[in-house]
Amino acid sequence: MSLGLPPGPPGRLLVGNLFDLPHDQQHLKFHEWSKEYGHVIHISILGQHIVVLNSLQAISDIFETRSAIYSSRSRQPMIIELVGWGWFFAMLPYGEEWRKGRRAFHQYFNPGAVEEYQPQLIQAARKSLGRFLADPDEFFAHVRHMVTALIMDVAYGIEISHKDDPYIQVAEVAMASISESGMPGAFLVNHIPILKYVPVWFPGAGFQKKAKYWRKVVEDMINKPFQNVADAVRQGTATPSITSAALQGLPEEMEDTAHERDTIKYLGGIAYTVSTAHNWFLAMAMYPDVQKRAQAVLDEVVGTSRLPDFSDRDRLPYIEAMIMETMRWQVITPLGECVLYGLSFAFPHCSTEDDEYQGYFIPKGSLVFGNAWSILHDPKEYPDPERFNPERFLEDGRINPNVRDPRVAAFGFGRRICPGRFLSDRMMFSLVTSVLSVFDIAPPLDQEDNPVSLKPALSPGIIGMSAPFKCAIKPRSPAAEDLIRIHSEKP
Image (cartoon, rainbow, N blue to C red; front, side, top):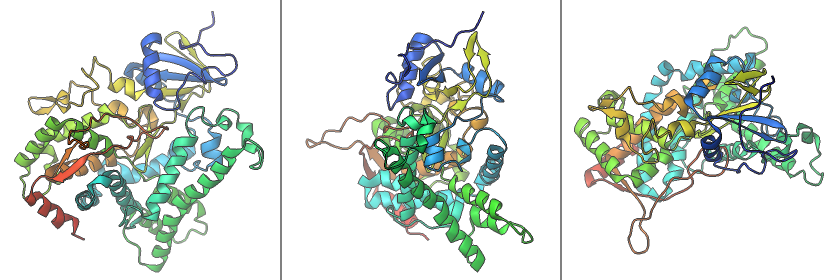
């Protein structure tokens, strides 16, 4: 007897579930369907099989136990072949090129390596305090500035001094190209690859014009900072960075280093990594009691005459729990599983063989998503999951090992787990502790001076970023303001 596909909503002839799937917040629709059809559900779009896993057990069985056949990527003609993101190893199919990219990235972003970047992390966070003080209404831009400045410093040794720096602007447009071109159903060329040969002048070929523009932006994002570093290395004036160290490490006797130089160039390009900072600011504005508790802990452990640093971390379990809850509450990769330039985006795993799971047939070439949102909002594991509550991870003042760590889902799954997670973790610690030590965060006031009600929301697209919101950011005291000025003005 032949096996059937996993259950799921019925589709229409030819197009399948194309019109059932929303263009954004797709993780919520999958979560809703899982309540009716179970933890493993199936849909199809224009003949493409899509399987969504909504439980940690199913994800572990598929992406961990059977990783050999569920670690590849599907063909994405728009984003990879037309826009030009094929260099990014997270989008490559499973194989030797992917392994080489992963090894290169891991060399510079493993737990031991990122400890070397802690001084830059602290400096970036502290410099951002001056920007929050000078123009608190622009905190969204300040967070992006901080993340970009840090990564440009670590990856290229390039200083970003202003939120409107061209490097920031180019990177943001490049990220928009991922968000729009990677959305399921947004471009027919992803489902009918032969359309990529349609000429740009042909009626209905607007996607070709977008792709041409985005491709130039992506090339600029990769090539311009790399060329600056390469020139500085030749002149002997390079600032220490990942790219300069890698270029200087190329053997002098090599006659042709083009491939190696390209590898280093792309390493710098993929070094734009993650931040959940916007969601954390939202949580602080929405949950003042949590904020006050965290500030009391910081005042007790660190005091008010200096800013926290990484030597304080072991004595701050409440801050640790707060960071864990930020990852869980509004997971920035709701469908897994990669991050770039402080944002996150989801691309599914792709099965490379026919398979059977729990009596269901999963065809070769199926796109397989892990729904991190379902896992991290499971009320059995996290009672009242919509509430931001760091206390859920604590017991007797310590992290409770019996509560599921959100890292099991927040950074993706299996061999495709996000390699930038260690830098992300330290970035969040430096920002959270620095900001809470000297600022109060509150909701904005309306015209009658009443607090505006805030609620979490993600912007449309596959990039997991908070929809814009406002909050009031003010120094906790005159002494805190002095501390901000002292540290933000240091070189």
